[in-house]
Length: 237
Image 1 (cartoon, rainbow, N blue to C red):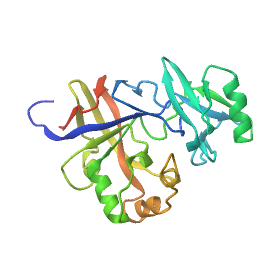
Image 2: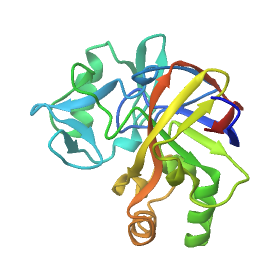
Image 3: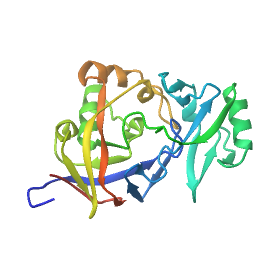
């Protein structure tokens, strides 16, 4: 990275989402390769038309209501899904498809990624506490970072919407990992949705549309693989 680096902050939270569009897990460390965080959004809930469950409907995705009532974590390489009533199913158990089908009300299968990526935009999503402070100020109350389902939350004492200035630049995370920031992250209604103890809040997306071009945070691709730990320092080249 050379000597011309700027310290921006530290990794405060690492989040991985084994199944696209449902709740995931908070980790203290994670391995990263070209695809992104190991196992992140590697699985998705697929309907009979071959579309993947999401908070919005597009050419590839199908809006499925209530997905934030489900949660996933890994045990080894198998995702473990927690249903709204707390029951757990292994992702490689056929019963998970029967249960999801029954609860969602139409036929679905839990499917591992094949040739087409499950990512909306790119492999790694990043937000900063600086941008969160701006948004919290605009809404008049603290905004919970979980709404944005970012892989990395960077804690920083710098001010402003930092991430937007990082587009097309490299950031180094910890001793090895180097990411190239590609673009701001476009946001959809999912940022409003209730999850766990967070209530539905339609002001979040409205504010992003009105004040931030409907974007929040950035996505990045992986230039150099490695491991990222909670508390790792982040430098901008």
